[in-house]
Length: 327
Image 1 (cartoon, rainbow, N blue to C red):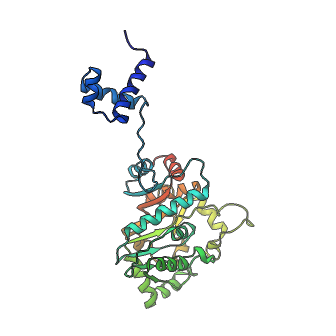
Image 2 (tube, rainbow, N blue to C red):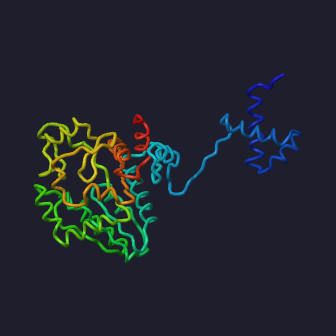
Image 3 (tube, rainbow, N blue to C red):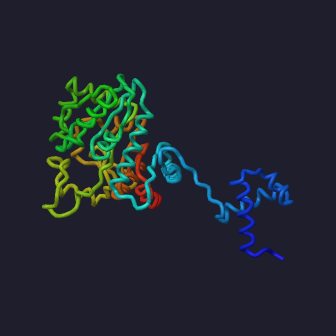
């Protein structure tokens, strides 16, 4: 006669208690119950399968390693880090968790001769705010790879680069030009300046670069809708709508791409002062820091297109990425 389901579960729980709580060996349990050691092993496996025993692994750094593995397998990149947050956490908490994890990651990469290129934006400014170390890196260079983009100085590249260099005890290397000028001729004239060219060449030799991912939240709406300051004098709202129609899901350093990672070519790119797309893509480690469900399509496109090969985000955003249909 077979044991009732309740009796079987109780037996499994008793054996699991002896093994996990009382720290008895499988051989000791087998002797005490008059069964074989292999039977004990099978019953312990069964207790896991039926959910009687749950194993929780507490990784250091408050990371969600399950989501990291899913994203790593899906996109074929090694350095993906997902901050674990509590259920019901607010957006600002998840944002702070992602920035803190990115700051830890960056510190782990630093050597005394590191050259790091750093972009602008709220997420990158959040990394600066979260970064804390007492170690000094006098040989580190923090380089501005593109001209200044935003009137809001707290999230502009110049302020972030100066702040990072100060916290690390390193050297800030600024690019004292605007991000975008009117035409290719003016851009080339600036890049041919010895000092400006020297800074851009140093950025191209960076060990890694840190950037955010821009979304298209400002591309819709009427003509009197709020405009993101970055886009002022750079891209008219009508042009941004055209980008949406072409499938833009995000942008890095003002260069737009679609969900499959295809760069959406524009004449306006000819006026960008800084790294060319070719030189940017030669930097060996390209880290994006981005949190928020609205950023998920941009992260997918950036990963598929190879614009980034490392990502730091939060668990809620990572789940949105996982939901995106396979290419």
